[in-house]
Image (tube, rainbow, N blue to C red):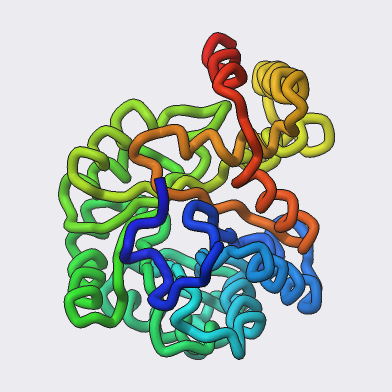
Length: 313
C-alpha cells in the first residue's frame, strides 16, 4: 500500500518513501529529554532518508514537538513535505492556564469545543511556522458523542474550506475509532499499537469497516512502546513494563526474525503493511541513528516463510 493522494506531498521527491512517516513524539521529549540539535538532526536524517510525511501534535511535549519540527523544516519547500498534526487538546502552563497561541507549555488538557479546535490549529500553525497543515486529526477523543457533536463539524468545515487537505481521528482504542469511521465523513484514522505483532485488536473490526468505507488507515506504535524494538533492553508494552507472557512472545518473535537474519524491529515496522486496509506506517525516532535504522526496514527483504512462521507462532 501507500499514502493516499491527499497525504502525499504536492511536489513529489523522486525516490521518497511512500509508506513510512516520521513520528515526532520522541523529539517532544517523550520519556527522555532531547536537545534541540538532536531534534534537528533527527528530522534532517528523515529528509535524507526520503521521509516526507511528518506526524506531530500539540500534546507531544506540550508544543515542543511542533516547535522543533517547524524549526527543523524551515527552508524546506513546503509542498515537498506533508505535515500532520492534531486537535482536541489545549496546551496549559504549570498552573493549568492556557498558554498564549503558538507557545510551548507544561501539559495539555482535553478540549473538544469548536473554538478549541480553531485555537489549537492556530497555535500549531504558529509553532510549525507554516500557513497550513495537510492532515488534521482529532486526538484521543474519549467522549465520542461530544467529539461527533462539537469537534467533528469544525474539522469537516476546515476541510471543505481547503484549510486542511484531509481529516481523521487518531487513537489507541479501535472501538471508538470504528464509530468515527461509521459515523463521520473522515479520510483516515491512525491506530496506535493495535495492528502489531503483539496486539491485533485493530484487525477484527476497525480495519474491515475502514476498508469498506474507503477510509485509510495509518499504523503507529508499531513497537508497542519498545518491546518489539528490543525485548531485552526496552521491555515496555503500552508505556508499562511488559508482562511475562508478552516478553516471552516477543523473545520468540525475535528469535524467528533473527533466524532469517533480520532484527525484530524491522519485521515489526513492516507487519502492518501486510494488512489490506493499512496504507502507511509512522515510526517514532529521537535520533538520526534511529531514523537510519527504520528507513532500512522499508526495503528489507522479508521472506514469506517468516510471515508464515509468525502466524503459526
